Amino acid sequence: MNLKITYKKIESCDIVFDANIFLKKNIVNILKPIVGKNPVFVFVDKNLYKKMKLELYCKTLKNVLNAEVYILEGGEKTKSLSYFTNYIEKIFKKGVTSNSFVIAIGGGTIIDLAGYIASVIYRGIKFISVPTTLLASADAAISCKNALNLESGKNQLGTYQLPIKVFVETTYIYDFLNVRYFWDGYAEIIKHGIGHSKRLLDYLKENKSIYIQKKIIPKLSNDEKNEFKKDIIKVLKLAIRSKVLLFNKNNNELQPVYHFGHTIGHALEIATANKLFHGEAITIGMLVAIELSIIKNNLKKSVLAETRKLFKKYNLPTSIKKNILNLKCFYQVMKKDKKFSNGKNYFILMNGMYKISNKLTPITSNEYTRVLKKYINK
Image 1 (cartoon, rainbow, N blue to C red):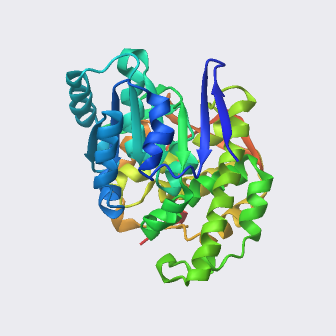
Image 2: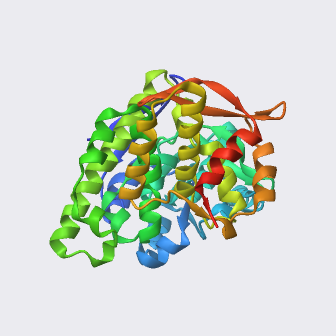
Image 3: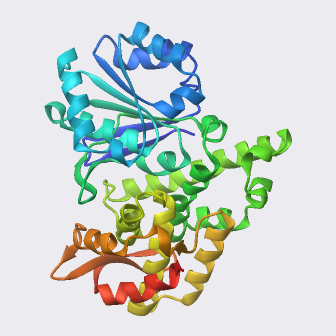
């Protein structure tokens, strides 16, 4: 099952599943016909490079595509102006043209940096994304958004441009991904379930796979690993398909569901110095947003109960420790949120299960603090 998304009728992206892009022969068979003889710049996650032993693969990229390969650490620091300046200078020194390609292999932060670079060179050169985490596959890679962080906040610089291709390799998501990072990816998947996809949510609720019960993936037997792989492929395809349908509905991705839970979530990421991963922070953000929806939009309380149950099932936090949270920093970040105006944060809330409101709701700091405190443990 391959998919296509479009943006503003002039950009389109093919999403290709399990093309075995990490086989060296497919650099010749798949990538070479796409990029031709044009200059190619490849960004590779350093952790992945070590775990997957990609030295020969990267050499093949250089030899076959005549590519410049940059191996760099992932993490939020990667999405900074200093990294951007460093690598865009390198790219221009090597002779980038308007026909060049940028390829990102890694998680969401690598994809964001590389995508942002591709989008601003000559107002946009071609970009190919190879996500290697569950979160990036379900979120960052299937997007037209690219962003950088500033010291004062997350994703404060951004552009919109689709990749031309996304290669989702489901095998590598469980073979080489840290367990906590793996579960972190389920937050965005659950968000799409409760936000707009009954089919996805029903599957998540009914799923009885052994790995969900055991939680510790490396301890699975061979048979259990095979079941796990089949299930992850199904979950990921359901999640991506639901996102593509939503993306294409109005011919753009700027739908409120994408930002649900992110107002509080992004601030928690920064105020915990990333001790909370993105998905974990968004999980708390969604719980706060759901409670505010109960207060402001008469959302049924059963939505909160169902969502909390799902978060626990998929090994996501339903509370955070007070000692990792810098509250002063948290409130500073909330005031710098792009939806902050006239002394209030404007939240995206729910009207019902599968119904994210298109209307922004003003919320005072006292209002969201009263709710957030319920999710902070001493």
